[in-house]
Image (cartoon, rainbow, N blue to C red; front, top):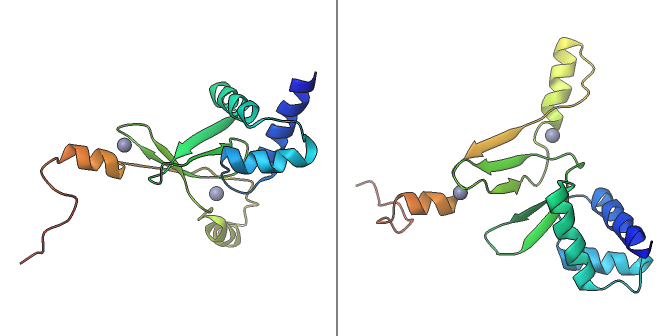
Length: 138
Ligand SMILES: [Zn+2]
Ligand SMILES: [Zn+2]
């Protein structure tokens, strides 16, 4: 029963938070409602939610793992080579939606946007002899 309560608290916090959270950030917030919760419990639940598809895990180049609720509105950059997903910091379409609504008379209810490409890691692997810097175009 107690575990269920902690689970619900984690899901609720993930949905309320704007943008991604690290396990430590989540742990700090959780202690306000569940003072006895352990950091290992937070990690275990986060891993389970990832497996269940409730939340998404992402690690940027800084090596820090962040979690985002899948129910939150957001857009992703997806690497077509390694499937890495990076969440965009904000929605770039809010202004576009307003413009389209004005032009077409539509009442806009939502949108989806995913950007595909190759991540810096995969680009580096694809051309091992370049050091990542572009040569000057002389
Ligand atoms: Zn990649
Ligand atoms: Zn959006």
